[in-house]
Length: 47
Image (cartoon, rainbow, N blue to C red):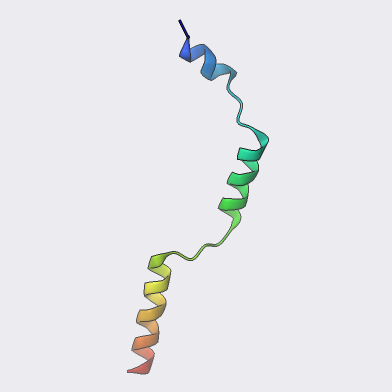
């Protein structure tokens, strides 16, 4: 039988995963909320 607690102690994430996490977290991504805020501000300026 597999001892999950023991296996978790041995776990080490791969380098690729760590690099991907850093790349994703370091980007300033525009999400839908940012886009909607920008559209709202543009409409307020025009009116």
